Structure formats: C-alpha cells, structure tokens
Image (cartoon, rainbow, N blue to C red; front, side):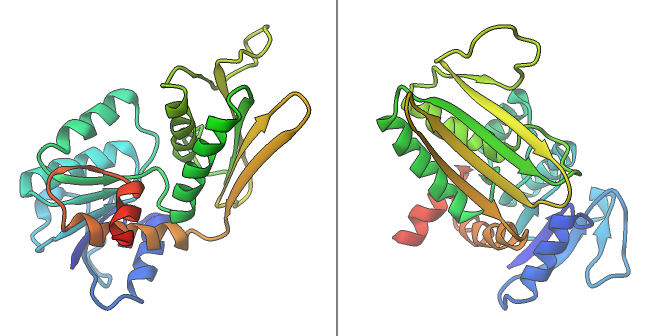
Length: 252
C-alpha cells in the first residue's frame, strides 16, 4: 500500500515514518509539506502539481489549510484519505462531509483506539448520571495551537448524544458573571511542557464525583492508529468514517 504523507515534516509525520518502518506491507512513496525536500528516503513536495507517484491512500497530520489542499488532490485523483488533523471550523467540517460523498474519508480527532473506548464509556456514564455537572479537562504540550483539543470535542459530542445534542459547550467562563448552567458541558485547556495528551471527564454529583482519564505517553499510538485506519479506508466506498467504524470492522 503506497502512502502519501501530508505534514511529512511535522512531529506526527515523523512518528508515522518511524511506525511504517516496522510494517512490511505499507510504504511512504511521497510527502507533502510547506518545505520541499527531495533528497530523503522519499520526496516531499511543496507543490501538489509535482506529485507523480502512484498513491493508494493519504495520511494527513497537518493543519486545516493544508488538509484542504491535499483533499483537493485526493478528490481529483479519487484517493482515500485518513484525516488526523484537528482544529476545523463548523463550516470546514461540513465541507469535509460533503467531500466524503465522492471519496472515502476517515476522520478522527484522535487516532487512539483507547480514546474511542473512553468515548463509549463516558457516553454510557452520562446516560446513568444524567443530573451530573459535566466538565472536560484536557492537557497538551505548549506547541498545540487549537483549544480545546479535537479529542475534548469528540468526547463532549459523544456525551451530548445522550441529551439529544441539547447541552451547550462553555469554553470561556472568565467573561461571565453567572452560576454554572445545568445544561452545559464545561471545558478547561492546559498547555505546557511536552505533554503528549491527557483528557479527563468529570461527572459532579451532589455528594460524589466520578472521573475517567486517558493519558497518552507517546505519539506512537496515534501513528499506529492512523496506519490501521489507512488499511481500513482503502477497502471502503465513498463516505465519512471514524474510529467506531474501524472498531466494528476489526471485530467482524
């Protein structure tokens, strides 16, 4: 399986490169990034029009503007894509959904299978602890540009399905002089050091609190998940897929 790696010069790009070294049936044939490098193990282009390699699937760890550049290439060449980039606006997410009508797109804010399990767990907890105050705390390294993290939103969206998407998301309390609403999910973002990622969901009751936490100690888990997603998406027809589809596929 021939891979085009979008964001090849970034930290996650490097993790994907290292992960593929341990896999026999996947090869990176080219990359795309803002800085061109044609002298490495595979060419990295800064101009999409220079790409001539035969590509079976695209893995995207970049930023939204770069994602849409490679999505155009994917659509024009009918190539499946794995999108692991976060920080999309509502309008951009709608555009990705629209593009999935013509090509297979796998999109997840977090490529960890454990996070998918956590998403299922917090959804079940929310269905039982319906009257709880729900808060999500996420911690990342000091270079992360989007806040809250895509994973925090993923977890909140899973919980909100229990409430028919009627919960509002509170990203900022500093400017509000009012008590907490029962109809909100609160978010807190912490940035510092080199922390890969930690997400905690807290369910506050009147007399007790339940919390569940996931901690990623290495970016390798995200690279490994992206490779599993790539193997999955190349066998699918056009549509928008996520980690739940991958888990179901592996269990069948």
